[in-house]
Length: 518
Image 1 (tube, rainbow, N blue to C red):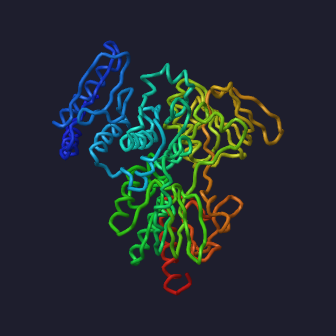
Image 2: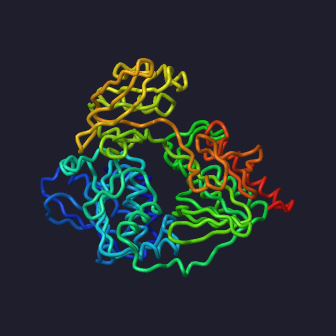
Image 3: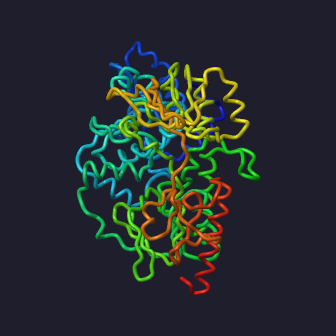
């Protein structure tokens, strides 16, 4: 990979403020097929700053680690960090220099430093995976902040035998000291919580944490949550946003073409713009937080997050969005990352020339089938209903593809494997009740979304789908608590609708506060 002239100029500007000296320290076998590609990449990168150099040593395979002032940063790359992982390499250098808006705040930093013991983390990635960089960058940050953590990114295509021996069929896949820790998209907060559960912490820091009080707390950082926070701040209220990440599920969207007045954007761009807009106001942004408890104490809404922080407010706006639904059938959880997948963009390349099933005939399912048809030998779409639910233009496209078959009115009852990987799927015709075992190499679950309401459902009313019940002003069944976006029962789960609902919830909360109703 040769860096283009314009990109190199941009990188010169980005690296112009580096304070430390960095060495990209490479160990590579003389005949390694990716050797020249890696050397070309680091040579171009070193040309962008006098603070960056590289060294090459004889090795058994191919590995690169980053040295800061001649000392290891505990960040390693086994592969060529091109594609989406090029950003991970750049961020590793910037983060090691103490720069980058992705660096966590003091509370999260302390939790990372308090992790017990020596921890060796390995993340297997594909360079085409859009979810992998978030995981790689989060674990790189942990390695930088805790000298007892070592993190290595492993590129699957360069280390195929290793990937096959572990039966990995989904990325990102994270191992901690040789044991599977996580598969799929994630953020720093979730990964940190898993490591705390596995390794424990050196000290209980919760007693030192003050309770933070606000006029409005917004739970969730997607389009609804950001809109609610901005509208609340514009009314002069003291506001905090609690979120795993700003952008929410939007970050997983590749292309967005129906956000009115913005003809075309991507989920990543929109998420960045949402955060930028938030930062124009005096809004406290608490990212990498996972809510674990919601209470009402003396008419105050009290939220506790993993790690012990507590936030209180007069008004709470729930905008926690929704997550991909699971089939909830035997074998599904067992084979996630080993044949069961949820992201065709990330995991599709593992199934080149193979037969996969796509569960779901809505827009997401048919879009997945169309994408996978260009990679796989055969794609079978399995739809529970008697007709497809996808837009007509997508149905026309999928019906034109010779290697896609569609099975309607059929229920998935079991996912079957050989302990290492998926081998088949058991399906049942809903008219005849006849069951059939279909041999497949992989299964992509695309059956819609499930509201992230579990933490709140004991205190606010939800419908049979788990969505929070609201009135026309986004008020819930609990005074002073509002819900907006995909977590609520509002119809049509769309970005533009979520934004409007977030604004509506904020205005309702402000109105109720002015009328002394909360």
